[in-house]
Image 1 (spheres, rainbow, N blue to C red):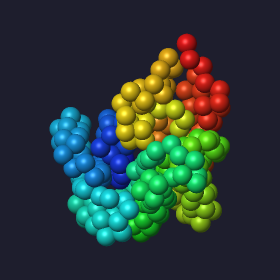
Image 2: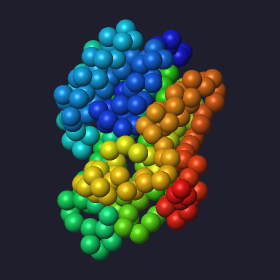
Image 3: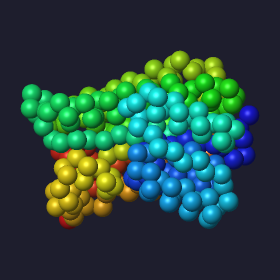
Length: 256
């Protein structure tokens, strides 16, 4: 049965979509398990949300690329909070903008290990807890890059196509169980995403110049809405873009 105050585990919770989702779900009475590599930011967020909303918040360092780190974070969160009902597999990144034959090992491995392996490790660690709780919801945070590729983004797009495949497979595998599966796939959203990709603040700001992009709060609202729907309703996939972005890539973007 659905609990009155679900316990939600979020990876990549120190910024961007993860932080925004933590803030919105805390305001809706959910208890939280927040994981990220930037521990100081995470602890500040956990303290703020616990004090402001009177919820239980567990925070822990996690590197989703490392199996032991993921298992320790998930098991510690479940022991501290008593259960896990919902996971938001949010940790992910883009690194560089390279043609397929030019992508450095460092960038390739960062994207594939975080965006694909990290998601598998997160889901693998958390599923026994969700299944044992008897009710749950699994959220993948994908991208429009999982629906259409673009030049310079071949490896990143491949990783997000992988996320889409994982979400679709898990949906089939959990059919008949009281666990919903949703992939939320945003387009252009102004978070730290571009800064991490370009490692250049000027280039990052230029990407969103003269458009009104999505924010982390917009994506968090998609997650909140799916979570609040009646139990028999499963939103398999949400593709969400700002009004100024008409295509999955930047092929049709209005700037004005």
